[in-house]
Figure (tube, rainbow over the protein chains, first blue to last red):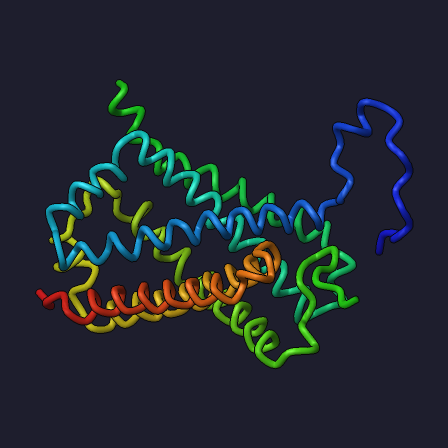
Length: 137
Length: 128
């Protein structure tokens, strides 16, 4: 299952230039890092906004109105996607770290991550976004 | 040259004891957060809609018991350890060596500040 570490052949066609050649492991790593930084940025905001519950409840309620707005719901859906991908792929990493033999199946595990991501994420996104259609209607 | 990343992630560090501890801490908090953070997101987006939540609702419903506050505070601790150790790794990868010590100090200061304000609101919001 392990890939060769030999240098990749030179790009010859347009398709070669447009296709990413790092493999699933590299893409999974890049998505994990990007989603992690996005969730970290939200954690900064979220701890500060929760502080307002005690410090300035009116300001907190105004902020929640932004979260509940159509734009806020789209942002929360993206946040949920980042959080859910990071959580699922994080479990994939933990599994391979503590059972190294499973590293040979890292591509299969990554596909399982995506199946779960869409199977659970699409209904979740629908629940978060549903009030927007009701406003539009 | 040591291998910082494999095809599937960051191998267990072998040189530094601090790096090894951080490596384990990230994974242990990941297991806790898989339950706590996803449960928190589900509760605040699927069980209760954001439009139904206010500061009063948090004080009267979500944080109306010591156990619920303890659960959220545990999540706060886990998320700060996990997120900031993750950002430590990112900083070690991308921040130039000449300013890395300062960058890490600012990062740790930010983590301590967030832990402080998060703990303050959990402890000081009156129980209704």
